[in-house]
Length: 122
Image 1 (spheres, helix red, strand yellow):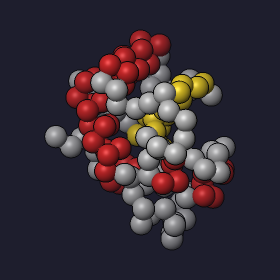
Image 2: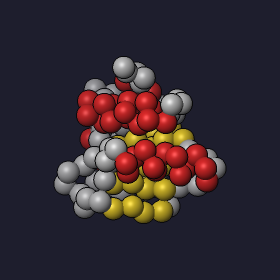
Image 3: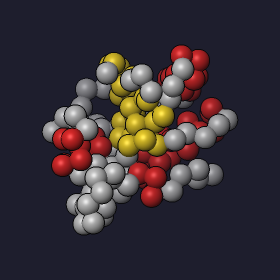
Image 4: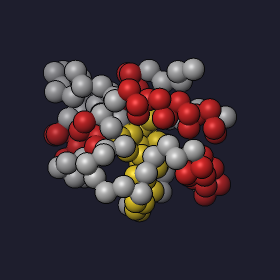
């Protein structure tokens, strides 16, 4: 089952002609997020998906961010219980091996060119 639309991953830069518009999310990212949604049993909200270089910079993203290649998403997640539930599904199902934890979101990415099995906080 597919719980996401490609539009949910669109760059939020607001440019009429955004260079990230033609990229879209990596299909494996969507597949993994669908499995996360099924494991949680509740909707997963994408707060940031694909980014153009300008928007990524304005968001404080690194120059080689996985958001620039459609291999990352930030997921809305507030509250310690919701954060635990999301992390538990991610780890038990081995969905993502790169996870960043913020106050109101969890960053997941699948960039094979970056260190694997890492977690960080914002």
